[in-house]
Image 1: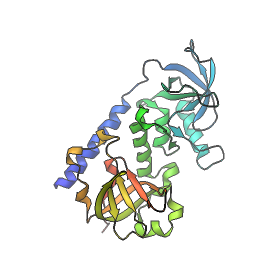
Image 2: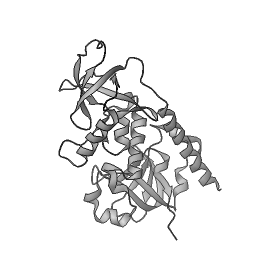
Image 3: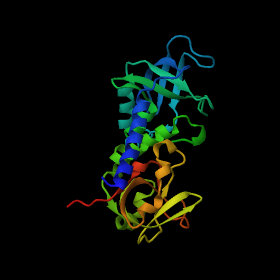
Image 4: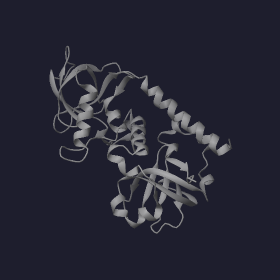
Length: 277
């Protein structure tokens, strides 16, 4: 096995270890038990608190899941998100972990993380909806979100597998296909094959620039936020120059001047492209 493949294997094993470690988690101290009485949609439910409610919490409350945004009723994947939420929690005691920053939203709903015990241990309902591709990540202040990298990784996993909202990423596309129908793919998860022409760094981070891109498509590497997933000592963006790679992520295009980009938060989003014989 050559050095490049060995480095990629180590990075992937590191990410897998973190994911498995999170699977051994459990509700934190202060989380209180409740039962869900009604599922309004994929991220909102009505609960009944079991036992004495904590200060400022009533016996019956409406809870809005933190960190995610499931499709609204009537939108694509809304029914699937609500059904998954219901199936995961129906008849079970859930543990409600409140936000340490803001207890309620503008609609007076409790802002919370919901924990539930399953056959594979305790899981965060918020995270599982992201992992199934049934919700988008919604975090305004990543630096104070305790589960940010965990949630972000679950969302990227859904994109890599082309699940739910991210089904558009299930099949690799060429750079020419993406740029020929760019309006269709903006703000969607895509998997694109491209050749790296050069590497640069600016305020967005390290960038891998796509060769022969009409609009200056680039891949922005962001190892600093979730650095535990990366082997930063071996991090060498220049190693991709001249290589054909496979990228999975959301196609972002904030302005014509800035051009399109795909942000890479985890090393497994970048793979060497090996054509089938």
